[in-house]
Image (cartoon, rainbow, N blue to C red; front, side, top):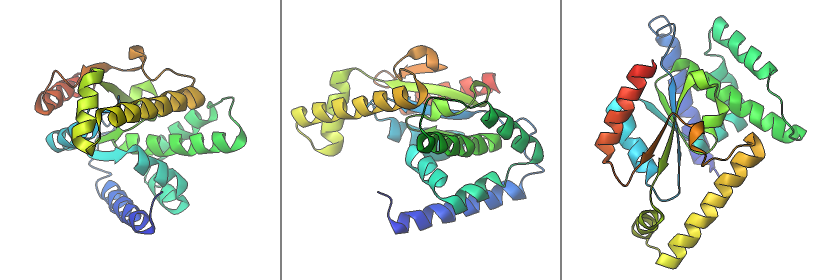
Length: 225
């Protein structure tokens, strides 16, 4: 659960980001580059790789928890959406108007808020969103979707090292996290999060160093923009 201190820190961060967006509104390109979204298998060290990538490429990092909290915080949510220009707001409303699903009212409202926030982030460009769902929350033309994978034994070893767990506990954690990821994608997006065709690129993080992954992503962004 998000603590009061972290909520205040989030508000401060987003207030600064909103100020930055408004200050540089006239300098931003009319067609900002697409946002990078990263989904990852549990234990493939996607978080540390994402940190390296945003440092290398000069992107702002938004984790799934940050996006979700912005959507829940009405004050921050309104502030973020208010930074959109008239054209972007019109595109957002048109996109949301076509949003349909089989969810109940509370789930529908939750997803609509998430879509609104991710769209606003994408409209400004220069961002990397890390976590489940982000790839499915944005229109294809506004994102570059990546999936990080790695062999199970490598991921088990990573979790053992990173969290100080036994092999049994590390394996159980991976199974639990991946079951939650699959359930989330299926429930809200009727999608299999492991299906490679949902993404622009699938990268085996056991075979590449973070610097190499950043270089690959830089080329993908350059060709997509």
